[in-house]
Amino acid sequence: NAGVTQTPKFQVLKTGQSMTLQCAQDMNHNSMYWYRQDPGMGLRLIYYSASEGTTDKGEVPNGYNVSRLNKREFSLRLESAAPSQTSVYFCASSDTYYNSPLHFGNGTRLTVT
Amino acid sequence: SQKIEQNSEALNIQEGKTATLTCNYTNYSPAYLQWYRQDPGRGPVFLLLIRENEKEKRKERLKVTFDTTLKQSLFHITASQPADSATYLCALDEGSQGNLIFGKGTKLSVKP
Image (tube, rainbow over all chains, first blue to last red; front, side, top):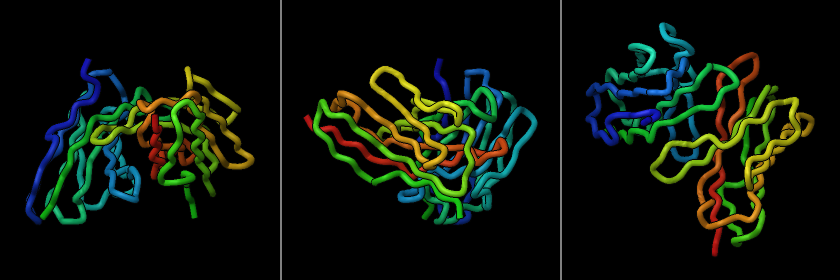
């Protein structure tokens, strides 16, 4: 029972390059989330998927897109990376969208030069 | 504006003492509040959830209180141990079934 698995663990991109961060959960959770964590800023929600087939913007969605591929997988895409997107990205899942604990992966550390 | 504040960036205490961490919020009306632990290089791990109609919740050496009048939650670790050293995050819902908003965290160091 792996919980929430994120790949890759580390990535370095040049400005303008694109990439997709992958996330999968094996807990049969309905809801999934992408957060970014920056020093002094705390965790900020980028996008979420309350249930399979739906996605919605969070607090800081600009420059990102997401795909809820199926109930298990939720990917985050950076179409044209910018240095401001240097951060640690966390995927999380929960049984329900509201009033439910989040289970986090161990993050992807992304550096954009 | 809406704010969620954790009392300090860092808290140092002696082993065996009780650690008390504070989470204050303004301009939110959360239905519940959660506490997480985060170790360096790892994702946050859920500890406790407390609802607005609950005054106190306990789990082993952990205790959380939630005062909606004061707009404050207190997180206590009794008989603290060096293994409790970590960053602790509080999180609350935006209200109206909104998203979970996180505080910036308090880094707790427990010295032997």
